[in-house]
Amino acid sequence: MLVQTEGQSYGRSVLDEEVQQQLQGEESLWLRESIRDRTYQTYYLVKENIASGEGQVVTAVRRRTTNVFDQLYHLLRIIVAGLILAFPVYIAGLFIRWRRPEPKVQIRHFRDRVLNAFFSVGIITVVAMGVVGLRVVTGENERAIESWLRQHLDRVEETLELEARGEELPYRVLDRMSVDSLAARVGLDLVVYHNLEVEQASRPELIRDRLIERRLPVEAFEALYFDGFRFVTVDENLGTFAYTAGYRAMTDERGTPHYVVSIPTLPEQERIEEERARTVAYLFGALLLLVLVVMVTASLLANALTRPIAQLRAGLQAVAAGHFERISKVDSGDEIADLVDSFNTMQDQLQESRSLLSQQERQLAWREMARQVAHEIKNPLTPMKLSIQHLRAAFLRKADDGSEDEKFSGKFSQTTTTLIEQIDTLARIANEFSSFGRMPTHIREEIDLNEVIMEAVGLMAAEENVTIETDLHDMPLVVSGDREALRRVYVNFIKNAIQAVPDDREALITVSTVIDPDATGRTWAIGRVADNGSGIPRNLWDKIFVPSFSTKTSGTGLGLAIARKTVESMDGEIGFDTEFDRGTVFWIRVPLVQSEALPD
Image 1 (cartoon, helix red, strand yellow):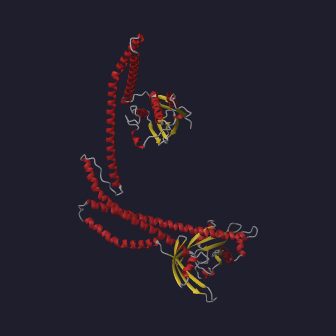
Image 2 (cartoon, rainbow, N blue to C red):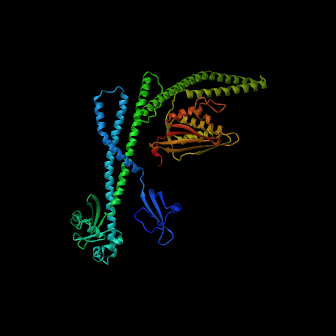
Image 3 (cartoon, rainbow, N blue to C red):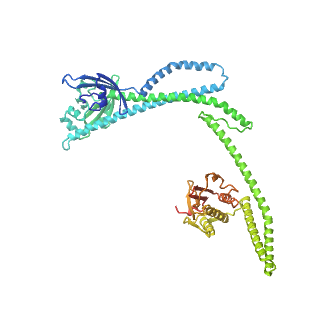
């Protein structure tokens, strides 16, 4: 059990059980202990209790250990001393280099200039931060002491107010209450001044040994008696030892100071100075660490700059010669590396532009081919269809006269019907090729997206074993586009959705529209067509909007390609979301024309 202590290091009343176990059979013990984020070096001395004949007396002495910042502070002092000694040598070296001719290797000279610049900036930064930091630490320490003194003097006045009788003012209590009793109540050393002289002191030896002056300091007298302040702090000096004292005026009924109560920090000043010195040590230790980081960074950066310059120069010369090749990546992590990355990015963009140009050329060639195919197919279709229709009509007239065999008549009718159907199919293919091949010639007008969707749903509603549900926005969604082309887009979406549903399940198609405002203040209309089909395999995602691609055995594969052209002509976007065996959602996103008419 703790029976006696001195200082603030021991806050526990019972010796730690782990320490007790380590002390068994030992006469003395050194331990390194961590208590509340602080590390201490503790020495334990064990002696038998001779007075009682039983038990042991453990005496411990503890002090804080030196941490990393303390070591950095000591290292900083050594480095500063070395710099002071090396400064004349450095000046002499600069003078010698100035007298010598310019070196031939300019890159090395550039590296030295970078190192010198970083070294100079580092030293100036450390000196500036040290001066500012020291002033900040000193100011914060002074404010902390002033706050500490103010709080304790307020506590003294509150104690006097508690001892007051009735409407008695605090200074009257001092007439009948000794300063020793008051100091014991508040747990502080106090000095009471009356008529500018010390009247009472809780530690009179400080007055007797002239460690504290008998008269009230001039600064405190002016602030309390002339300037009207009730509290003031004064910096005192005892030889070269400085400390701070706080003064509180106990005024009478007229507001004139009758007593002045003072708290000198002389007993606590050593602890205060120790904390301030430790804070300064931490500050300059951190500054030394900053200098080391700056110097290491400067060295690495200078080396990184000198190595890739030749590589960058060679790459630029290759570009100037017309060889568009990437420069090898530079791992210097600085502006040179950014420049190389930017150059390589430019090369990638050039390659991408070439690929895009090639794709556009292929699309132009495809359009031209589509126009030619459409022209070549359309020319014979019309006379073929008319000739077959005339032939069939003539044959039917003969059949009515009974001059032809009925079996041959049926066969002939079936054949001609098939030919007409195939010719219609060829015409449809030609129209689709023609639609895809020609440049957009849509007639743009303001149309309601919801009305167009309902027209498309009405055209496809006659399909058997198909349920089409609509969930449209309750306000008109006015967009700018070609009504017929947009309706064909939705007809194609719904038809594809129906065909994507397996035969073993009933098709459920959901058509919906919503609005979507973006961060730029522009409002978009989003239309979706969802099915409950098998979904689109992952390896086909990139081919969905490619011309002539189709997952069906019939059709040209141009429907979705034409739909994309239609939506892009409306300044919109088209896409799809799919999930295996759950279905697919095709969507378009087009800007609204009358977004101000929509509700918030």
